[in-house]
Length: 111
Image (cartoon, rainbow, N blue to C red):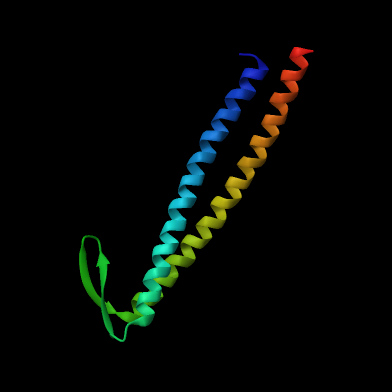
């Protein structure tokens, strides 16, 4: 394999990784939206107990406890999104570097 082919293969691998990370990020952002909606609805209720999903069943739980759990879940996902964002940024930087490298080699080969 030539150096240019190796660079192209590395570029394709990084692009695949970026697609996977972007999908993870979108999934987590959807989870955040659901948790925000849940938190909003819990804030509106006057009930002292609500039903909480545990696996495939619903169990009664204190509203305050569920609100705390939802906030904790959101904080955890927010941290994961920040980590994934850093990975995404690093991959974008790597892809841009590889692209520049590939374009430079293509120009040299044509000259």
